[in-house]
Structure formats: structure tokens, C-alpha cells
Image 1 (cartoon, rainbow, N blue to C red):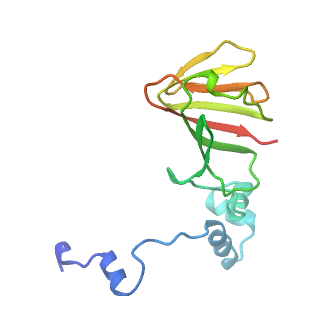
Image 2: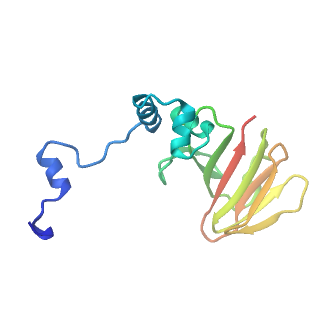
Image 3: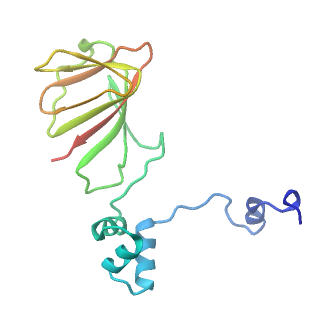
Length: 173
């Protein structure tokens, strides 16, 4: 049968009553089951996979998360639209999130934003102005980054014609 005449896998799956959309698997459970089926210790499996034992353990225990673009957990404020990334992980040490910066002036904030931990900011699109309590404002463009103590008052405004987007990563203490 020529390639042009071969039935597609999607059509074959539908004819068999199977879903044409791949179903997600629990990667950690699948890896653990494969390891146990082979009667391997965590150390043996890690050696076969070329991974550190701790990395394989994290995979098996669901300490890895993938967030498809636009599928993060939304948290809206009057100045920012936050999209929490890796929200399904419960024992993480940092909180990554993408933020759409709607604020255009410092006065749109009700005072300084302050919280525990440290923060890393990376500009994804547009341009922003980072205000901090103890330093002069800094204008930042796509590709620029900043790292600061989040207990110090801080606010970010877009200085672009459109809303800017940034990646924020905050440590959890």
C-alpha cells in the first residue's frame, strides 16, 4: 500500500473507538513501575538512565511539573495578571510565574509590594520600570533581569505601548 493510501493512525484509532488525543500519563508512577518490573533499586535504575539517584527519586515522587503556555493558574490583581507556573507541585522552594504588567504609573499601586524571600525578574516582552524602595528606578527591556530581596518594597510598571510580560521567580521560605 502506498503512503497516500495508508490509513492514518488517527482514523484507525477512531474506528477502533480509541481517543485520537493522547492521554497524559503519570510519569513518576510509570518510571517507578518500570523500575520495579525489572527489580532494580533506585541506584541501579539511575545508573542505567545516566541520572543521579536524587533526580530519579524526584521524577518518581512527582517533583517535576510542566505548564503548557496559557495553562497556568491565573491570579489577577489591579496592576498585574499573574500566571502561576508549576502550580501542581506542593513541595517546591521557588514559585515561578509569568506576569502581564498592566500598570503604567507607580501611583496605581496601593503602596509597596513586599513579601518574604528573594525574587528574580526577567523581561520577556516590552519594557518595564522596576521601582524599589532603596534604589533609583531602573528601565529594563526584553532580556534584562534583576535579582533582589523581596522584603524590600518593589513595584513594576510597563513603559511600553502595550502591556509588558515578565517571568518572576520568588523563593519560598
